[in-house]
Length: 264
Image (tube, rainbow, N blue to C red):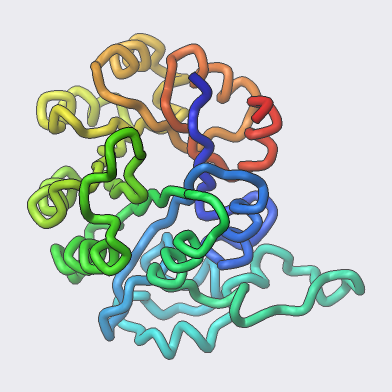
């Protein structure tokens, strides 16, 4: 079975991660799902930002958790990707809508309005000053779009929630029991502990480096009885390893390239 191609923070190899432009490019390339990280602003909005602070992606020292959405909307989240744009006469002008901060709600609305069904993989970031409120807000957002209920028979779920935090996933299971969960795994030592804790229907989400560096662990994960979604898969060798293990989804910065390699 051909694995689902999931755009990691959008088409983030080519465009600034977590911007609407990166996600639209991934959709147009044919990605089957979009992955995003979410954090909560000081005034209660979920925004698609990976880091706890804004130094890397917006050249600002502020923390997401102490900033209001209006503060973030005044920042440029795209220029860091192409710092020499001022010297490029062909570089497109910045578009605040496509290059600014992206809320989870806007991303979900974009997916809901797209011309074909697309799934969303939402990673909640922890630790955070807001704790369980993050998962509660995610559930509220999914409920607004009707994506917190069991899909019709034969249809995939439109959204799933991922986290490295087992506690966060347990909260999510209580709040939205029909939403699929992905236990992210970074290190071999984490797998030894988590394999006894994950729910029977949970998906396993190991990193590609874990699978490459520990072949025996990779095989045990593949044969665990759980679906496996792997991050971040960008090269031919990484993709071939995932195919050999029968993974169900590959999360990649290069959705167009991986789709081409798969012949999709």
